[in-house]
Length: 163
Image (tube, rainbow, N blue to C red; front, side):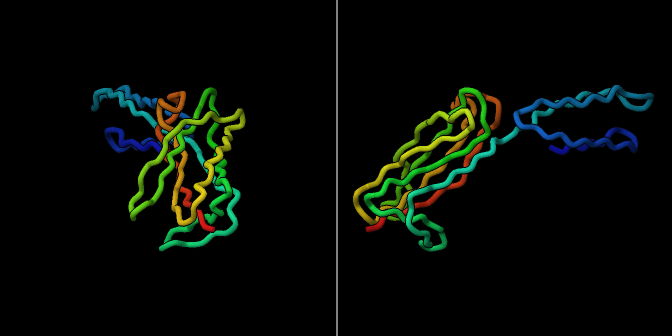
């Protein structure tokens, strides 16, 4: 976070603060002979770091302009997530399917993170080909087990089940 303030007169103050959790910041100007004192408060919201990847796919390819991981219709898709670790933290996994040209949520569920901030979830397989799906992991404040960070949505991972 970079804070920069224009203090009355011609003085300018700034500071850089790196935060890993939501942090309240207060700036105080005590005043002088020309200007009254003033206190300004702000909250710096920190997102969690999150990354996820699919495994057990046999190739990648594009459908339209979107990159997909191709899985056989009988091979389970497995999602591994790494997220900023915190005691009792859970990730929310959102799974969507694409029947008829529109994305529909099929499941949203919370999974506990290990002590190293990692979670491995078996997404299963449909048994039929031609299924397009996507999955993402998120930290939802405070539903993910704590209120240390602000809500953070991960990137979608797209996958396709074929023969």
